[in-house]
Length: 335
Image (cartoon, rainbow, N blue to C red):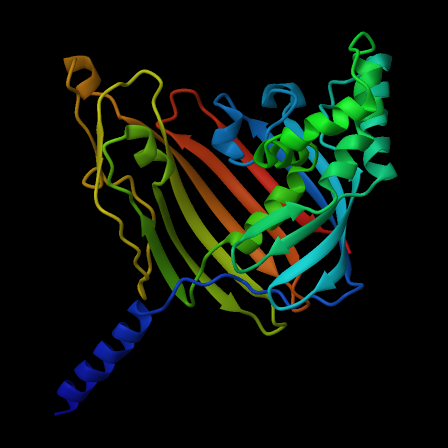
């Protein structure tokens, strides 16, 4: 009888653990709160920028940052409710290559920095949808008119013409370029976008489609753990795997249908060949190649009791590592 009761109890515990839902950290900010951050990415990266930063577009290739990409910024809460928070963003150090040593380059950096100081960006974050917008996007772009005019003096574009033109700029592109100057904000937002469950979790998203690229973009596996410490800090540790198509492979990729699972057991990421299989229609050589590159991240997150991110670290590498590419990203709260 005791064995039966133990079995039933353990089964119920397992069911409860398995039934945990994916959740996201829900901050409780207060108007007037502020926090400052430093962001550093140590880079040895040989692939496309968007493999490492999905939503960021840099003016310069990652290699030009001389192995290190750094950025400092602060955020101040202007308005907040249970669904949205509006922040004033102060970019105290834009992400510019350290290799800029020529006087002309230094002047360019100074002008960009001053432009962000004249009109500080205001961003509104929607926690439920995990979206954000630049509230004063038009004012920010108009503020860059004088800077752009100084760089291209022969262009006959008036401020009125520029104001009309920016109405047609794609919002996604504007945000991507903006984050290129402040990639630390991208890391800060991704901290709040990170799904988790306690005490351990496993999430899988695998889309089945005829289109290879569509498959690749939607493939994601996460395994991790989460707990709250005595000082009410939320700690999350997670392994994340996404994929990108090989440039030298043209065969189709097969993936299983969608699945989202949460596990109560310890989990680690593996390159599961039963999940992703490459089949060549054209050449025997392609059959021996992996159809995908896997971008693997080991991420640790800490949220303070006052809702602000205390720290984020991302250790990133690519498999197979024919061109060894790694990145170590660190976001730290200063005050």
